[in-house]
Image (cartoon, helix red, strand yellow):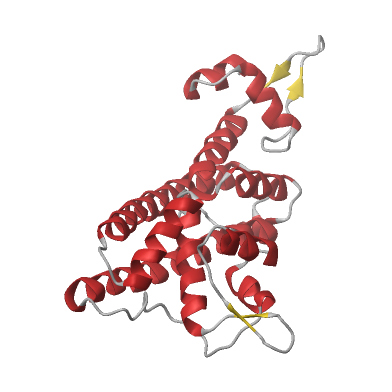
Length: 245
């Protein structure tokens, strides 16, 4: 196959094919005596796998998985996928708690906060950042945007995140990954704190639910494409039949 043959299937440019090979997302191509690249079904399968990984896990993880495979680091590639699935599960669990909170606010009108699982406080900014997998600077930026409002220790001036603050941070992190801007997240959290209308929060939850469903389905497709590719690669580990035949 030529680069154009691979590119045509996905509606991308031949330069993109060359870039993917350069970056290690495709295995190296053989060359003709005159220097032209020769691609095979192995390369076509690798391209399908890579392009299916992108919507499921993001460009960075997709590239890491493919380059790890081509460096014969299968376990490293699988670990990258595991992290994506673990994050999806965490998002689902957090979303469930947020949805329950919306129902609680709607039914009772009580200013009890979003009801997310949170450790007993107080917690430092570093501890909360570690819990969410973000930097302390990110939490401080959210505070400046009016999303978080942790108290300060009177003696040291350090931030003290109580359980309600941790719950706010969890919800902010969820919505941020869903692509919501900081000002909208601040509005949602103000609604929760005031136990006012929950229409905007409910809309955000519904939108994020659809995103999680779409990502979960994309992961299934990516798994199938990746299994197809691994089955074609020479010397697959331990003689495993990755197609299950």
